[in-house]
Length: 291
Image (cartoon, rainbow, N blue to C red; front, side):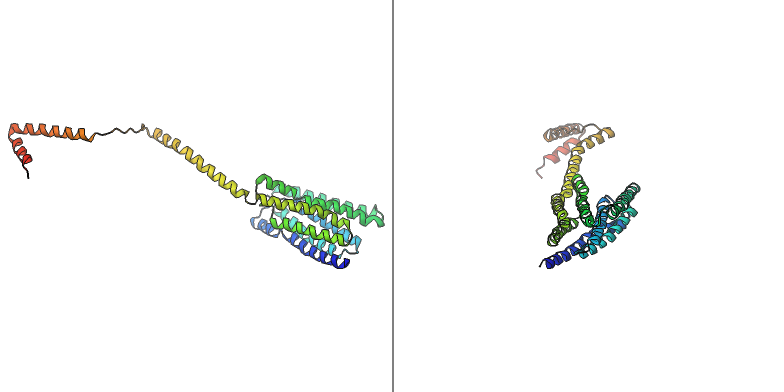
């Protein structure tokens, strides 16, 4: 029963871990298409590569109940190396240099140091235990590495650089590998996955909080722009009047009745003048006719 449970959890752990390792593929496809690493960080991929190298070394030393650990971490070493190479190829110059220095320091120098110490400074009977707890320490580092991405999410209020699928599969992977460690009675496999589960839940919670935050921010920004335009509109109109040299337009009321009276008075004067030369009498007779 124990071996059956370990085998089932190990197979599930391998399948889910494959998904975890392949989750960044769409991200790196976009990086390849745009020819830029944009705002992505290299630290999660470098630490994941280092952790896979350590766990592969641990599986090779342990041998017993380690085949499933060996296969998934061998795949992890390959895929994380590809991610790192793509990141270095498309990163800006400053980021590229920093990534190369981190790769050399972490994945070459530090791993070589661990390898040499385990092989030549630790007795054979203690090598698996010592290396196992070193793996635990760096596994915690792998799970904590996305904290930098989480800080970016909080700062920018955008989940663009923290895909939900990766956070979900990391959490699920932590649960399954914890079960595998319990079944094979290996605390070094089980313990770090407790922390991985906690960090995975934190990432998914953060995603739920900020997944629509950028949309709300854009709406607020558009509303502010519209309000600003409305508030500036009268000022623009005044400036146009000043530039054109026109004063403020004034409207004067017109008395229609007084105008009619003036026209009638003018007409009477005209008719009176007409009587003096004979033309006015004829006009008055025509005006007074009932027809």
